[in-house]
Length: 301
Length: 217
Image (cartoon, rainbow over all chains, first blue to last red):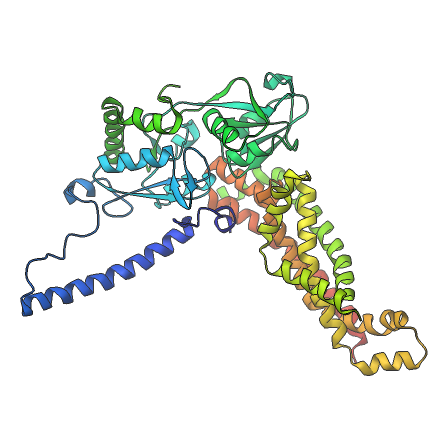
């Protein structure tokens, strides 16, 4: 139920969790049929001497030895299945029906370096970790911060970018920091690290949860919330894109670096991801991707 | 054992959310019962324009998903009018349920044999009195099971308000599940809360049915 409502735009290319398994089943059925066809074709070529073409090159962007990738314990053979929300422009979002963004680019680059076929999969942010634990994805490349609670259920790579959570308020409200607010209603994205933090504050009356950072931010100009806690980079991008009358206020509330969690007991995969990240930063690929999306290098921003 | 402690530990949070769910359900059911009556009345009007207007509304509402309607009211209309999440939920759920309730009422009214109406009219009753004393009691008895069914759906549909930030039961389950990374436990727990409400509601409807059943011939 969650997914069918919340994954409204996620359903376009990659269905959310429930959809994904359906697709998978369909694919494996298709695989069987394709397999049978190849077998028949093989027989035919044997008899009639079609010769030449080998039908066994598969469809994965191969090159890797299967022994190497089988050590990763992948959800789907030959593919790097990574999850993201698809609702977090410019990190992951849909543009003309196509999933794109900084996280998608990073995940794809990591996949390429692991000699695997990139397979991005979308679902509501708050369901991603549960999905990872359930073995639906190999990793989450979805702007997820490494926290002690999360580290209990997944192993995190090194950080692949740094940002921060800031308070965003209506333009001209005069609020300079979170301490200026009184009996405030604050908006936060569901399942984020800010929710618990904000509930502890004495001058925060209510914390409203939104499906995404963007949803929280666009409710600031309406006045239904006094402010929203939104990532600096996401906020700046969204405010500019949809010309929202909002301002960033005060110092960073939460340090918000992002890392890539993988399932527990997948050390080989984690090591390979860490190596890919290090290599990307060393050879300038990372800077290139970062420049493309933000105009700046966000490794340590 | 952990299930039980999960249930107990989160009970204060969930009970708060339960109250919001009940308020949402009560408001939208009561308002839909009234608005549905008006719609059914219009739907059976003598004037074709009025009939078509009511039929158009019902088709529009029944033809679009509830989640879409709520998103339009909460996020879509924000550029024109700002409605608090809770009231946006009440408005959306009322508008939605009223369309279904109207059709249920209509089926009840039309199930009363014309002879009954003719009998009432020939006894000198006005149209309004006939509706009140002859048609309504008989119609109500017929529609009660479907009406109860619709109200049960209405209770569960309040969960869609979670997606327009109303901190009702389902949204609370989402928050707790995301916080503790144990989706199975907390979605099952929230399911139990809904189940209890629905069982109580169906019990009430059944009792009412039995009471009205006394007039069965």
